[in-house]
Length: 441
Figure 1 (tube, rainbow, N blue to C red):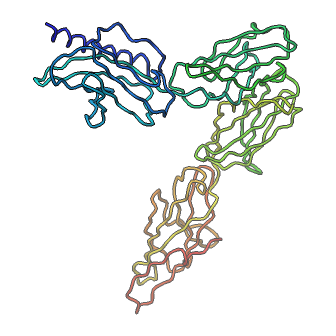
Figure 2: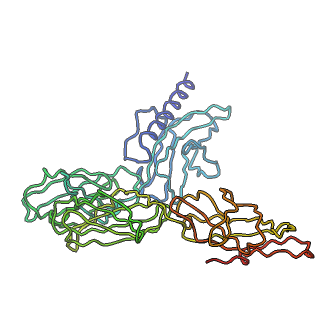
Figure 3: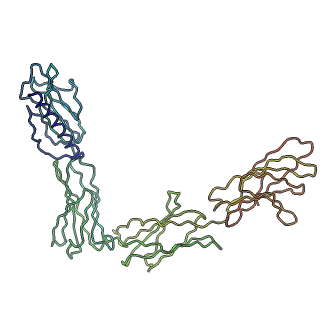
C-alpha cells in the first residue's frame, strides 16, 4: 500500500510542477512549496531565488530508510541527473553543484531507487534565477495633440526573468501633488484629468523585484513643451506633363498649434532610399510640394511635425500616401541586332531584326508594339509592326537604312537606325551583327 501511495504522490507532484511552469511563463516569484507529503527535504543554496549565472547547490536529504542499499538520485527539469555528477554526502543525502547556471525556472525532484527496482519520491522543489532590474533609460513623456492622455515610455533594459513591478512617480513643481501610477515594463498612459493645473512636472520610474530596487533619473518638463502636433494630410495630387514632367502634391495642415515645423520624405516603393525635404514653419493651411519624379512609377509620401523649440519631439511619420505617376514616352533608344539572310536577284535583302526590351525606367509605360520601317521620299514605309522582340523583313534594294522604334500610350522612342549591307553574289555566308553595327539619331 505504501508503494502505491508514493507513486500517486510522485505523479501529483510532477503534474503540479508542470502547472507551475505553464503559469509562470519563465517568470518566477519566491513562492513556498505546495502541500505535498514528503519523506525528506529538497532545497537549493544559497537560496531558492538566485542571481542569474551564480553557482547553485541542489541538496536532497531523506528522512526515511526505504530499503537496504537504496540509491538517491535527482531529476532536473524532467531529465535524470547522471550519477557521476552527484556528490554522495552519506546514505541519506546527496548534492548537485551547478556552475554558472543560466536557466530562469527549474524543477528538481529527489527519488530513491531500491535494488529490486522500486522507486520512491523523497520530495521536490522549484528554484528560480533572474536579474536585478536595469536602471530605466531614455525616460520620455509626450502628449499627442487632440488626445486626452500623456504617455511616458522608457527602455527597461534586459529581461529580469522574475516578477518585476514598475511604477511611475509624478510630482508637480512646486510640489502640490504627488501621485503614483502602476505601469507596464516600458510605458504608462496617464489621463490628463489626473493632472492638476500645474504645468511643471517631474517624473521618475521605480522598478522592483525580489533581487532589489532601482530608479530612473528624474525627468522635468513643462506640459506645453511635450505636445506633438498632428501631422498634415494629402488632399490633392497631380502630374503636369508639359512643358516639363512635374508632380504636385497639396498637403493640408491639421494642427491648431502655431509655431510648428514639418518635414516630408518620399521614395519609390521599390527602393529603400528616402528623400527628405524641410517645410517652411510659417505655412498657413496648405503646403504645396513639387517633384521631378520618374514616369510610370509608384511613390509613397510621408510627413512628420514637431514644435519649434529645441527639445521638441517629432511625431511619428504619417501613414504613407501612395501615388502612381502617369506614363511618358520612352526615354531611350532600343538596342537591336540584325541577321542578314538571302539576297534576291532584284537586290532585296532578307533581314531578321532582334530587339532588346527596355528596362522599366526606359520604357516609362507598357510597350504596346515595335515598329520597323525605312524612309522613302520623305515618308516612312512600314516593314513590320509587332509586339514580339523579333521581326523578319524583306528590305528593298533602294533602302540602305532601317529604323526601329518602341511605342507606348504616350508616344515612341527615338529611332535606332541599322545600316543594311547588301551581300555580293560571291559572298555565300550569312552575317549577324549586333549593336556595334547600329547608330542612334
